[in-house]
Image 1 (tube, helix red, strand yellow):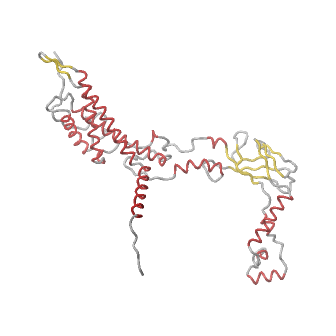
Image 2 (image 1 turned 45 degrees about the vertical axis):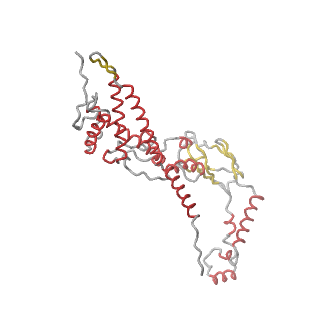
Image 3 (image 1 turned 90 degrees about the vertical axis):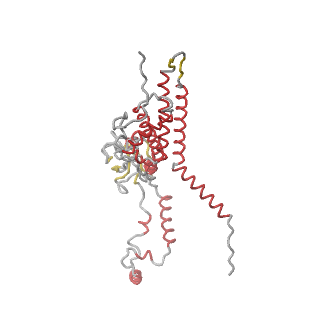
Length: 387
């Protein structure tokens, strides 16, 4: 006895749990739409003029998949358009239906790596260290714990890189503003007259233009650079050489800022539980009630394409049905081909629409609009006012 092929009865009643995943089953608008879509798909496939070898749960499956596919496409677009703004944000909040504001967080985080090398900030900790300088000793080993003190511990266990060395001559302004100059009685009385008596040495400011101070400071600096040993250093590997040779009087300890090479090379500088890549951006399934009519129409069309494809595969199993003195050939191949074409067309259409909604495309459209307005305004004749 031949097995009876179940066909669509013409109507159905949806209950929560009839879909495979049950993602939207408790949404009242979804419950109404899924029954209407099942009837619409069956009629678009030829019911009641022809039998439809599908049941209500088949249509429900197609509709749920269509909603999920629509949400996946929209969420994929949102992730791609907002990824730079979402790096480092928490993964505990659902971003579906939320407005994601553009910000400079991602760009600044990229720039922090440059800030670390430039010494203007960054995301690598700067530590402080010092070298106990001995008289007549010019070369020092940074791994020598008897002379080198590091805030982070021994340099033998943590490779360091010195970023700044505080080894400079006495500032010229200190030599310029000598507290022992200009202490004569006449000068002091004149300072009192001008109200500068409490300044030390206020006489250095009396009736002197600013460029005179700058010239004197420059003369002191040139004198130290040309006639004296320049303050400098040479750093190669872990050995540092100071110039001039320490004599015990000019400096006894040299301070420096440094970083740990392991900190700079560590790529994991963020905290756990934050957005790191495409896979953990917290976009969840869309809420069907919040989808507008444009999206719902796309979902209906995609559900129809899925139902058509499913019907094609079913009819492919029963490609020919015997009848008295003849045989009926089913249209399985045509249904499958048409369904795949429709699915690809709908996906392409949705992606193109979403691409036109990106921030980049919106800015380009606004720029073109502003250019067109300027061209129109330039063609408007200006009024002539006669006084």
